[in-house]
Image (cartoon, rainbow, N blue to C red; front, side, top):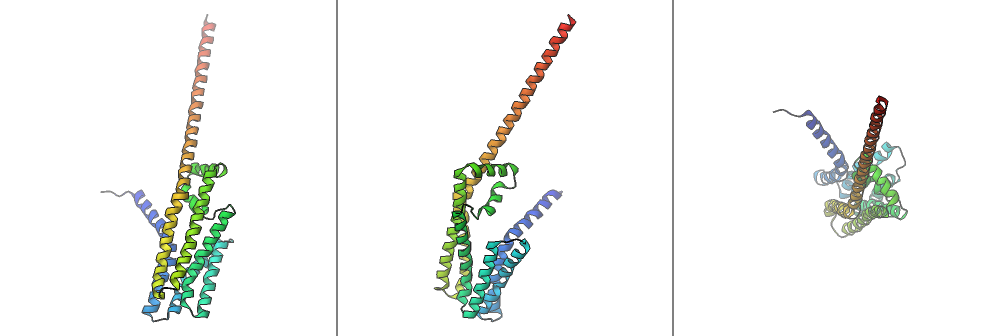
Length: 261
């Protein structure tokens, strides 16, 4: 039995791609959650200190993202600022609930930013959704550009996709804040992450059904129509060239016959 090196290489590449996609989730959710319980239950630290130290990794990751991009990323910088300020307020006030509530501030900041971007006609979620729709295909990229320029339905679906995410994030913020101040801190440490995952699921399902899905279907249809039109044009050109060659051949035969006579 032989192994195909190409398949093995493709599998490794897919594995690395999946790991890259899940790395932010691991750093922002799994690491802080595990660190909190290790510091509090394993090392006996106070709830406030455990929450503060477990928030260091996602805060550092956000800051590093701002530095690495070497450009003014207003949203990332704002998220970092919210993290730092909420941590400082939590330590000054001595209230662990305020430290947990910082995630709500991040969600609401992003949600408001997305809704404002829709109001200004530049939906913020388009940058993350477009690669999923065009899939690096030149034909789909061109189809996207044509639809964006000439289809009101396409632009409306684009706005709806961002609007859904903005509303979902604001709703998540409200639910999390209510939980922070009505449930025990230990419960909200893990329940807050569950709320976030559920909110993301709702965003993907509803946003996909109302925005990304219809946009993808329009892009595929437009790209296929353009490809078919191109094929027909090429077929017409070949047929025209064939008729021209046939006429030229007939003319040469006629000339030869006249000359022979």
